[in-house]
Length: 256
Image 1 (tube, one colour):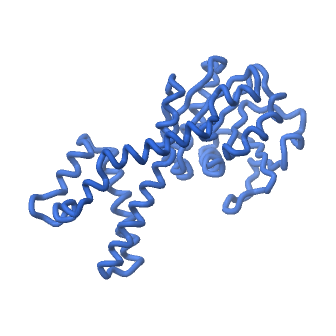
Image 2: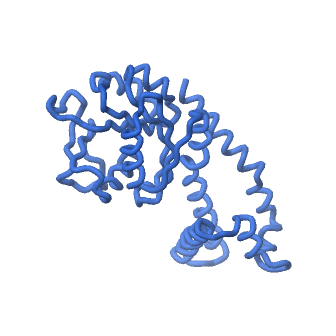
Image 3: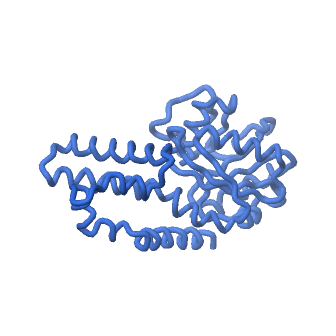
């Protein structure tokens, strides 16, 4: 996720320089760039360098070991921005002290500037720091703020994990097409384009997704025949709600 965001920031030119801490070095698939300086750890950073923001893009399982090294950076004007799933503002502050912290939940379409990120700030975040955060998030897609941090568990389950649900649908459609005799490349192309086009139509249409679905479903037609094969029940609100609830519960567990 951090690599996806970095790609978006470089493409948008939101900063002249990025100092990246990555013990394993430059990730595969990310081209070398003059805007990026790579460091194996925070202690390797030149002491004279000052940053406007520090972004934590690490796994929840290692964040408690990573954060203490950055407490010395907690000063007036410094913004800490976290994309760590499940780690609360309070949990971050236990390591960083009295610092301006924004907790966010982005998703992987950020890599192509089509992400959606929800952010929640602690009381020490200034208006100017909110605007800085918004500039960073605008470079990778849409963004929204919530005042209730508890909403971020549901955000994680819906939009953070959501791309996986969509990719699963693409896989299923492609395999079903192959089962009906389509060449694998054509089945994959049909599945990808159908999901991408339908999503864009839903995004820009004044009609609700429910109405758009009805528009495709002619009585006695092919779509109705497909939906009659328990597809509506498998994709019912109840089933999706259980899946999202499980993801949200896991997000809350990661905070402990």
